[in-house]
Length: 477
Image 1 (cartoon, rainbow, N blue to C red):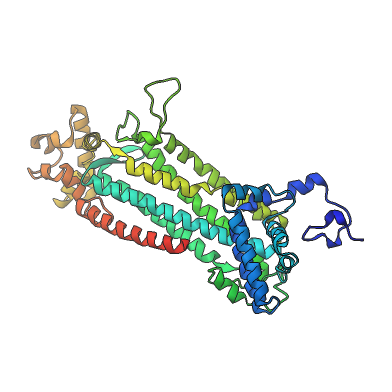
Image 2 (tube, rainbow, N blue to C red):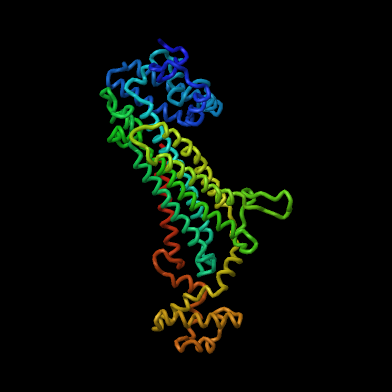
């Protein structure tokens, strides 16, 4: 007997009993997969084209269906329209919502769109389209941050700062060299995301529920319309694959790690103890109790956000572990972690504007770069050029440093006679070899902090970022 209580469901035919009301509400995904409306509309239009090519639909029917789909998308493009999708009273998921809306507009023709199609392939397609779009937005925002770092590096010129290992002052470097270190991280991040986008860019439509479509659909036509490289090669894999979500979240975790490292350094450098940078007031707040405070809220929040991103990746890892082929309802739970990181492009845009507004205390950084025996490596290199084995040179300079510590002066403040206590190799030219500029320029290798090398690196980075921005424009097209 036909069950009127189940009518309107996409699967109700073999059921006699109604769903438990609480379970029905609990299992609905429309409350989060409403975000996929644009992707669902695009995929449905492509499927309509395939049905037309297979002569299941006439050209007029296809035109009417595609126009109705466009109307649904336009009607729900605003924030108020999106809320109507999310809060729909009866739709189970975004696929059901679109079908209900189609039927309301064009009657039974709306029901024909699901011919030769399964929700398993629909969600697999929608999610690939969604992740591809999010990757495009993220890469674009990464390029903006990289550009802000390069502009700050240009403005820094030959400004110097100490570098650190083990959080102890190590050697002087150009401020530009430090900034460009983050550009390298960003470029790797973008490459990982582009690789992920390339791997996911295959179209599941035509895979059916598990074994492939039962109609002779032109899968290449659909893939081309949606901007995919080609159809997926195996229907079971296509409907059950969520590797691309996990890979996307793992790549974003590394983006978050790099953001967090930058945020941590800026937070430290903004303290009175360092006083290297002045964070912009537009990205800081005060204390409700202490009137003098300016707190680095943006960098602290960025530092914390990596936990949310990594948590999403871990959640998907555990969801996918041990799932048999092919589609399982468990996979519905991979969606919310993917949606939970939508804030990343916005966070990157904020940090780009923050970076552009940073002010560097050059005098303080320069002073710090010239205290604490940061020229000791250059001093040892001086002795190497005099024919002293490096291990021996290391020991001689170490002894000189200890002597300087006891006397309370830097290496270049020791007299030649004092230096010669540690080796006859010290000559008058030693003092020129351990100046700040000489200490920088002795690192004259590709990737080093020598001034000329950093100028070359800055020009190369600008070119690479320009190429990345161009790729981001094409990816978002």
